[in-house]
Amino acid sequence: MGAMAAMHLAWEREDVAGLILQAPMVDLETAVLAYQHSYASGWMRLLPRGELKRGIAAALERVNLDEKQLDLRELLSHSPLPTLVLASDSDPFSPYERLRTLQGDRVQVANLGGQGHMQMWTMDPGKHRIVSEWMRRQLPKFMPPQLQVETDRATP
Image 1 (tube, rainbow, N blue to C red):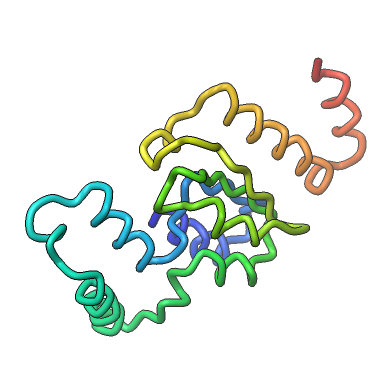
Image 2: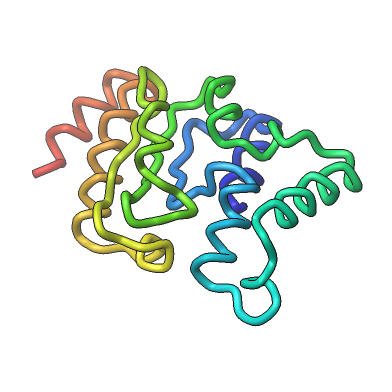
């Protein structure tokens, strides 16, 4: 849910040049159903999916939100910001298969295969490399040419 808040906030600010979304939920329904399957205990596991879906719709209506406001694919399709999405084929909250279709000029989707939602939160050398390379590719868009040359010389 943090990715949704970050995206909405980034659109309101002029000092945000790009986004890195680590294990973002695809949409609220996917997140609630993944939570029920992965982490919920007791009564929530017993609720039929149809009841959960009706509850999600009622909750959104109650706070006057459209489900598209909490749909990462919808939000990214309208975002002008360069964005790196870290997803995983093993994360039911942020499934790579559902997010890879976002790949395009402004959006890069990286599959951190085999990592569940909790493992996605931690940084490791593989994630660091993906993030560093993406950030390095973004630099020319935001730095004057004279600083780019100095940065290139300083980087091993």
